[in-house]
Each structure stands twice: as structure tokens, then as C-alpha cells.
Length: 103
Image (cartoon, rainbow, N blue to C red; front, top):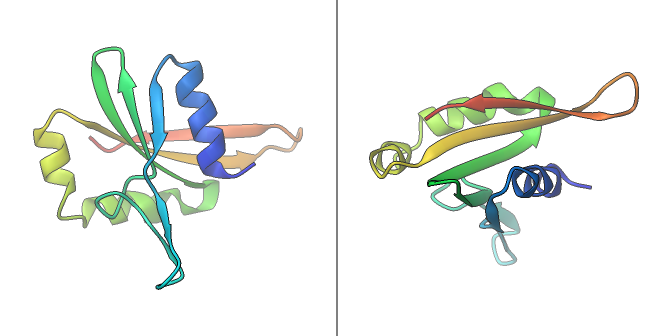
């Protein structure tokens, strides 16, 4: 299961309607995020949440990516929350989530 799939399941468990907004570009052979920083879009509970997902070791890099993004201020001004989900496998074999709110 990928970090995106884990975050999708987590956000749905929290009661959000979610969509994967990251797309594969076969011509450039890269994944392209919505606005350059969003993997999932979650709506519900009176809010819209942009989710960037990654492995546990790359959380800081994704936070910086969002901080450097030209679209992040527009998302914030539109009332969106922006969060980073970092997934890491714990010593007991279970996956743990580190969530950083960068709204």
C-alpha cells in the first residue's frame, strides 16, 4: 500500500470525501501534484483539506516544498487547510502517521 493509499484510507476514516488529485504524466514520466503540492483533496466537516503524502523520512522536504509553493498562499486565502502526512513503519510492524499542519 502506498502512502497516498494510506492517507486516503485515513481521511475517509475521519469522515471526509476524498479524491486523488496527483496524476501520472506519461510524456514527462513523472507524477504531477495538483498545484504542485497536493496529492489528495478532502472535503467534509465544513472544510477543505489539501494533503501531501510521503514517507516518514521526507516530511521536512514536503513542508519546505509547500512553503516554497506559489499556490500555497492562494489555498490558505481560500480557507483550505494544508497538511503533510508522513508514513513510517514502526518497530512493531504497524504503520504510523505523522501529520504536520502547514496551513
